[in-house]
Image (cartoon, rainbow, N blue to C red):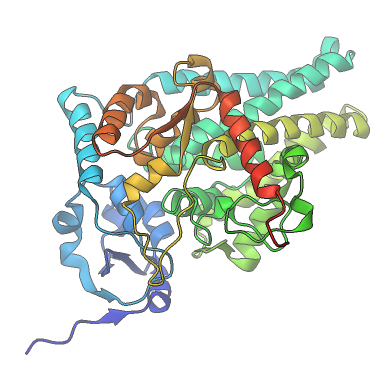
Length: 445
């Protein structure tokens, strides 16, 4: 008889999360990819992020079906017997069909899904606007002498910083711009240095949390809430008296998002070491440098340097304006996609299984808007094609309009509702209505 196959609990798997001891689980099978780390086409960082955890939904997002057998089979070392986070059934015909059709589109047309020259033009405009508006409000005499012009520059700066988050940061975190992991690291670090917020924390929250487990309480950090919380956004979340009329005041609090995130970053990486249910692995030297170097540079360029030339109160005034513009723009565009009344809020069964195909869940937990508006596509980083993005995050955002028809046609064939509003304002109104409804006093309270 052969040796009994080794088994791992998720707690045991979690201890194998370093460069010299790296295990991952996919569909209940555990693989030792320590020796594969240096040869991973997606770079070292991506595997280190997934180390010591079940990466099934992430793996299936970024790889063709069959990649496990063709690449990882020889690294198989055992079975995973318990689950830390919800798990999904095997991909359905819908998932296989939509993935095959989109991959076939790029192959048959000879297009690289990760490369579009337009993205570099957009990056140039974003950073040029950021640098110009920053320099003008503090160092150009004609502007400095006129507070109203400084305020306009602060608004432009805040909007440009939000665009850094929606474009280079977001693209890098999904490996959707070029095939070069070094480019991803550099683009991701722009968030650290120009926004003062951590690219690494974003990866844990967004790539490992939000995308695999969209709108699943206890797994998606984007919808993490406490009890009591300032807002009620999940149907099964406990109601408190402060939620009455929350739609009238909660949106104003979104202006504090950037301030909250910068403090939360430190707490997540160095104290609690988890982002909601997503554990933080040991931090590499590069990410340590980007984290602290970014924080120092941000406060130097946004506060310390300007204070050498302008009164402290004026610098703080302009800083608050820019920061609130960034916060509002990012918060409102995010909320209009998932925290709305029409989408699903899945929960696992008693065995921790989501009784729905992962790809179908992505469509049903997401709302698109303004597909016909090039302006809204540009200023939201293509988040108005959110369902497309959730199904194919590794595809450049500039390809989304091209593959939308394929996805919607496939959804129609499999009777999966594709939610889309004509305008951003309709989508945002849906968010406000969601807050209003969940703020109502439940019967019996």
